[in-house]
Each structure stands twice: as C-alpha cells, then as structure tokens.
Length: 581
Image 1 (cartoon, rainbow, N blue to C red):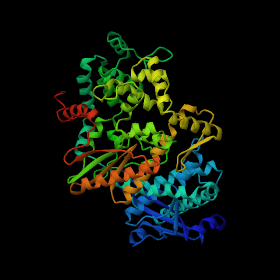
Image 2 (cartoon, rainbow, N blue to C red):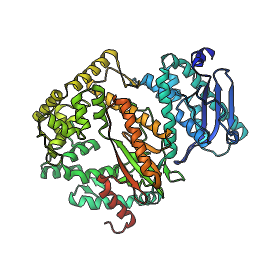
Image 3 (tube, rainbow, N blue to C red):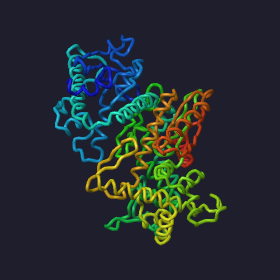
C-alpha cells in the first residue's frame, strides 16, 4: 500500500478511504448503519457500528487542510456525515467521478458502479449476488443480530479494500487538482440532496389517490374538441382522419405509420398550436410520475442528483423520482414550507454565452450582452431593421432562435426548416447568414471538432473528458463544449452557494431551486445570483452571464405558466371527482 500512497503523502498529511453503509428510504435522509475507515499511511482499519457513530462527538478520521479523503460516490458518505453532525472534509477525491472521467464515452458493459469500475480494470471483486444480498440485509431490517453486524461490517470493509485497489489502478492517470475540484462538488451534492424539494403533501396525496378518476375526466374534457379517444384508448385511425381534415402534415415511419412518440408530438405542437391540448393529455396519461416521488417525513422530496452521469458531465437524476422530471403541470406540487420562499434561478441563454466567451467572437459576445441574442442575430445579419423589437418582429426572432440554438448541435437545414416552419431554402439562407455573421465562432467550433477527431477525445476547460468511438458523428461533438462547460459552471456555482450557506434544494439543468425564510429571501436570492455570475466568469473567460429569478412565496406554489391550465383542471377533477368538470 505504501507504493500507492507515496506520491499522495508528499502532498497530504493523511489519506483516508471511507465507506458507510446506510438506510435511505422513502425520501428521508440517510440513517447510517456503520462506517469503515482505512488509513493509507499505516494500513490500519477502523470499524464503527451505528451505536458507536452516534456516540462520537467528532469525525474519527482527519479532515483538515492537509488531509485527503477518498470514497466511491462520495456524496453518499457525506450525506451520512451531515446526518451525524460532522463537518465535511476539505480535500476529497471521488473515485466514481474519476472513473467516469477516465472512461467517459467508451462502451462499458459492466457499468459505472464500484463493481463495474473494478471489472473494467480486471480487479478482484465480490460477486454481484453477494453484494445484492448484503444490501437487502441492510435495507430490509431496522436491527441486526451480532452475527449479522459482523457480516455487514465485513461487507463494508470489502468495499473499502476495493476502493483502495481501484485507487492504485487509477492513480497514474489521475489529474489530482481537477479531481479535487470534482470532489469538492460532491460536498455540494450532499448538501443539496439533504435539503430536498418541498412538496405539498396534501395535494400530492389527493392527486395520486384520485388519479383514475382524474385521467377519465381529462380525456372526457379535452377530447370533446377532437374525438380521438375510444374510452381511454387513443385511436390512430381517428387521428389520421383528424389530421387530414385539418390539413396538418405528420411524420411517418418507413412503414408509413404515423409517428406518435413524445418528441414528434412536441415538434408538431410547436408548429401547430391546436395540437397542444392533445399533446399534453397524451403526455400526462403516459407520464404520471407523481406516485414515484419519494417524500420524506419532513415533506421534502429526495432522489439522487446523478452527478457526472451524462457524457457531458451534466447531472442525470431519475426522471420519475425527480420533481423537475415531472411534466410542467405536475410541478405544481412544489410548494415552499410555511414561512419560507423558493426561488428558481436560471442562467439566461447559458449555451450562447459559453459559445461567445470561449470562441472570443466579438459579434456573438455583443449579441449575448445586448440581452436578446436571437433578435441581435436577426439585426446583425440584416434580417430585420435596427429598430426591430420582440413585438414588432416576433416571427423573425423565433426563426432566428431556432437557427441559433440548432446550430450549436449541428442541426441540418431540413430539420431546422421543419422546426421553424420555414422553407428549406430559407433555412439554408439563415445558416449561411449565421456563418457570415459569426466567422470567429464557426472557426473555433470547426477547430475543436477537428482536434477531437484527430486526438480521439474532447474536453471541457476543467478537464471533463469524452473519448470518441467510431459511431460518434462530428455534429454530435459541436454542442459538447457548451454542455460540458455549462456543467462546469453549474458545479462551480453549486460549490459557491452551498459553502456560502445558501440552501440549494436542487440543480435543474441550467438552474437552481433555493429555499430561504421569507425575511431573508431577497438577500439570499441576490447572493445566489451574484455567485452564479461569478461562476459564469470562470467558464466564459469574463463574459458576464445573466440570470433570472422566479420567486415563489408561501402560500403560493411553483407553477410553470405552460402548465397552469392543466393544473387547474386536474385539481378541480381531484377535488370534485363527480363533477367531471
């Protein structure tokens, strides 16, 4: 073990590998069962059962400025430490995050769990069936016999030893400074998962209990203008005739069958607003995820944030278990606690700001800093007069918005024309205008893609790397710099906000939900927005990113304007099931 730790011990006074076993059920905070700690300097092991943990007044391993703590999926361990009232370490390496960095983009049939990371490197590991049985033992009981306690501690020790040998294998390729930054983010994740999202439990329970009645009422009310359902069944033939009668073209499969997937309905409804009620009805009937929310005793919904799970480094929480994975109207169950307020604070046009800053294209920077990059492009490209506004040239602005956003990920002219409801010829013209207006950006993008194809990998400015495979298309790489650096921006902001004492309930792609007592809500919002702007500067090279805040004060609830009408309809059906509206 000394050969593994030798290099690290030159930089750190102590190095501890830790692993907790814990129970985390039904949206509640974790209940630590045991802890095993290995000191890499001495090789000694410490084992603590939960009774020992509760009696401890302080963390039983060093966590100071000169100490390093390692774990696999460290946020889980830190959730247990927070529950025990212990401060978190200052220096962390999360072996899960570093495994993802090392292998991101590759095909991993063994997955990204601890066992998967060991298997990928050909390292010894326990059998999957043994691991599953031990997890069942831990989660399925509230007390354990002395023999079972010995088994659980032995299992926890095996995870510590596995993490130790994983470190030995990964260390030669590890970028320690960037690993420490990613490790620091796992502390923020632990705080955010501990906070959770406040839910109106009474309304949530009412909706779940009455869902069968609600769904029948929704079909009856919404379909009366369409006639597409037979009972609760959507009839493809009726829909085909309705489309023909309304002269609406519709994508079909190679076999000539109407495509009825969510993405097709979303694109079609954007082009033909008359379809929106049916699109939302179909999505609601097919994606009623409210029963899947795990809500703790404190009324907070909790699920794993899924940090470092996507290829771009974005968080990837469970769609069904995450309150912001719900459809827009279902998010109405989010409600601040009494005496508190919520703020949904998002980065404005984050991807465009990143593209402008990293490329150094002055015209694109000016377009973003002007406040409306889509209208700015229309003006810079000579598509609208200099005095044009959102109201006076809304159609042209929407067309340019489709172009600006679509070109970030290599959207072609035909698809762009379809989405913007313009001719292919006009789409090609707009694409060419964009290239001519922002030549510096286009050269930067082309150089990045070329470099990635030659080197076989592409990376964010802070080292989130994606390795390329033969199936990766050049167009799929164009948006990686914006998404991966957007993820870096979110991580830096999350670290800053949690370390500043702001209660961050959840990260949501390019936004955060924060909670605060009403008397300090405005102050906390201002502080959060300032820290988000500072995080933006770290990524964009100084371009000032904008933020927007949506504030919800008790007794109001979170409500997306696009979901308000459906929410009101559903709540009416739930409270008056006999009325059927």
